[in-house]
Image 1 (cartoon, rainbow, N blue to C red):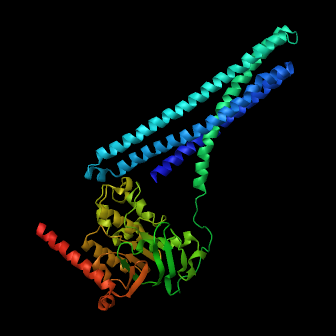
Image 2 (cartoon, rainbow, N blue to C red; image 1 turned 90 degrees about the horizontal axis):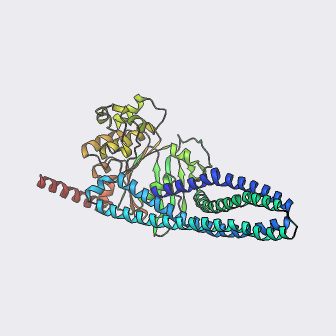
Length: 472
């Protein structure tokens, strides 16, 4: 993503320079060229035609070298984007870099990227040098032609010496604009390649914007209904296969399954990040595709596993759940998320500025703030994707007790065993299908897939605790 953003920035800069500098210079040069050409033509149109016969050659050379400049510029900008992306990634991932002693490895990558960029810059400078040299040589040709043909015309009495000197002076006003226009043309052609890349990005598929923005959902039975939904990534097998799942309004549903079972894909479809390949989806009784995506997301409070925090104050970060919320409402949400205590201990409390990505907070603190944001939103559907993985068991239980008191519908993805006992219903996914559905007690009694997952997780958790005690 860093690479794409930086590359777009470079391309936009090239286009801006073309519009602000190259095109005005081209127009100015063209006007000067035409004016000088008209005056020259009134003196001797035959000599003028011979003199400017070199102009098409200059245009052809500028076109060829301009294309080469565009290719070289594209390669160089790509290398610079790689260098900037490497620098940003190294800075944001400094903890992992130091923990794994990756300094030498990253330094080597940075050196190689820099070496490629220098080589491409030399290549670009060489092409520019070729263009400048060619234009300089060709700009001298009209003078040689005028001296030869004009001198013959003076000797034959068709031109006076004064007229020849005037034409030489006018020719100077004609060749330099012509040389400048050729360079402008080459630079514009190179910049147009950058424009093509920008337009290519702008033509990427966009999210749908139509659909209803208001509908009644108070009396519906189901909050979400998946009906034979299938989804396949481009180069993979089907992730979801004819999945059918109905989530009652107001219930707390846990979705469990092994890695790759389709849990995250299911949430991506629910949030509108991906569209199912087949099947249908209803949202609070409405066909999903008939509802505006922004309207759908307004009714969902989503808490991802990786908390996203911006370098602004604590209060502002939480208020992204509901931007017009008062400080009292923000604090009440933080209390329910178990975040108020540590926030009050910060240097400036809720007005404390966070570092980039909230790195001056622990993982658990970042997750609590993300939960507070979702609670503040007050949406009728709360979606938690391993949202408390960084919390200790006691804090997690307290937070979930508060969350389960939430009146809306709750969809929870978790691997924590003690949480599965608290939800109303559990949907078990395997290979993209719901293979079991029921309460925790019912599913254990069936001795099926869920029971085996639960027993395996319980055994692993027990062994982990025993190992921790032995280490202590």
